[in-house]
Image (cartoon, rainbow, N blue to C red; front, side, top):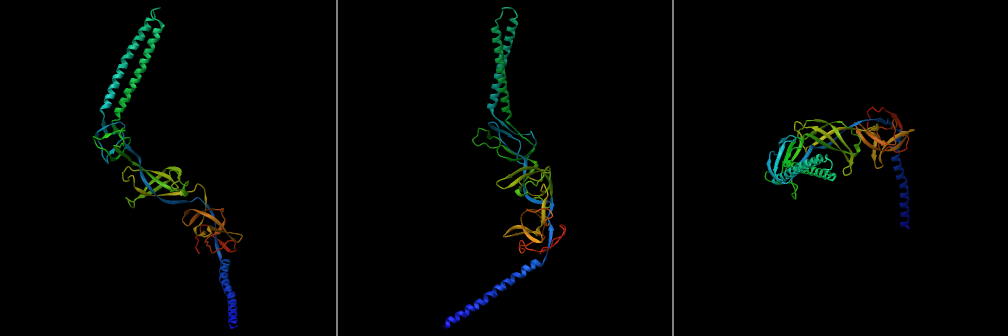
Length: 377
């Protein structure tokens, strides 16, 4: 009996405590709600602008032209007149090879051409004599004239064929001389005089490697988010670690208009005049250039954007009540950020928003100009 009375007393006490605890929790929430309702918040209008942003991205220098020079015919390197680091001019002889069999081929082609020329000369004389004789009635049968003309035409075709073989043999001889296809610098010499070269090898190697470094291509991959914001001839600045404190200038010369699927980026190229030879292929650069939307975009203060568990949004004020508007952010400029969402110019949003301010509640506001500085709460 005593145990039963004791248990009832404990239960009664617990029942008295529970309402008290509940009342205490309720009192804690109420002041926060009242504070939001009674406070005055600043709003700013959404602004439509066309702003530019300075973007810094890494780039790499490549030569304008880059070629590995192979021998076009089988032979031995006779002379090699250049080495690594030598500057060469277009058309300059770099290497000479020798192949005795090509001399033999040319001599044979010349002999065949001479024989064809002799045969052609005889056929031509014969034809003209028959034509002259045919002027005497009954002296020459018409068939003989046709046969002589056909023989002359056949010998003429044979002469053309033999002449073409001579041209081909001479062209093959010209392949023994390796010349520079453009002005540049020899960056590698793989083989030496006496080495056997040519396409007949199982694993052919280049004789030399040549790069044009007087002009360089500065390649930059631009993230997809900025694709379409670049312009041809946009001025850029860049710097390299090899020359700290020095700024170089150029412009966007080529835009690929293609986003690579592997890296989700667009390739652009900047032509760099490197007449001083200070810069080299393979160097990395830090490139700065402005990006800008083709049309106007909507901007709000950075403090107006809230990122929470509920997503990214701004708090619009319509009819004295708050409304969450989901947005995506884009370019940033100074203290403002581009927003994409169900907004339009001059819509009012809280200048300094936070997730403490709930959706669809009544608040008091004052509007400030877009140019005024926003004070974060």
